[in-house]
Length: 430
Figure (spheres, rainbow, N blue to C red):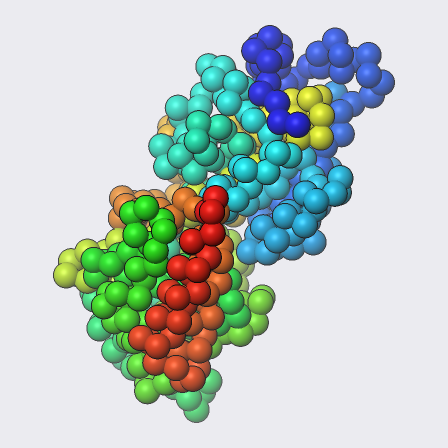
């Protein structure tokens, strides 16, 4: 049963530095409160979260945090959590995309942290507004902001130079993107201009939405009851990608769940890569000479997509909910976040982080991170806040795959996806 944290308990936790000491109940319960986090992170991000958890455990003897991947990457966490919540095998905390919040919030096992975040010591207003919005569903706070990011284009300077292609200009367009990708492609050497995921899932549709938005289109109608992504704007966007994949053959179609496109970029076999700050540590490790540019624009509109992600808390009992909130208040505090950012290339989730003495070192460590941070201004819309969005996304991902593989044209594929989406959206309670 969901519970809001009692105000008295909040005061007790925050008074000890957001959870440094145990309450009387915890002290008499016999040992530290143990909680489990499913982080879904990989590589540098996994190492960083595990390092921070170890630091927390050493400094907070009354709480023990256990880390697990959850048996899934972040992309696959929603079905994993959904299945786990049908039993008692669910974690206390899980990393979930912000677009999934409406689905998770309706589950009775999702905790309510609304009272906890009201305490001034948590500094809730220090988080960016879109992050607070992403973790608050109908007035109920279900966790803490985890990551804020946005999509940009990373370009391999050596690949472009070898093909005689100039780096993107500030006012570049999607036609420029297509031309550059075609010029950078070298079939003989196994070099592609760009890549696109076709394995299904949100990663396949993420790059399509900005193209649709820039052209004046949208994903769903304002009431979230009807799909509109198959408008002229959607057809034009997917049609352009089809021309690149089928006619120009400049797109590496990535059917691997592990997304091989990044490895191609790191190995000098990909010119342009739509991605975000989360790949920068890997590019640094691979010693890639890269540049960063905002997305190509349509009529001067360079709108991008941002995905505020959440650490969502689940309710086993009151002690564990309190311990989870205490840990997340510590983890998302400015000093710990600067460590996470320096390890992962993630953007600041709090305004106060940019005032810390080590912030400039972080900027220096990741060339181009300033461009990605400034690009948050181009993130003007969010994905629809409906429990049916994951199904809509899956239908569009299937349409993208069929189109880029040359098995369908853009209009037919999107119309079919829209029909399926409308049926899903018509279900009561969506």
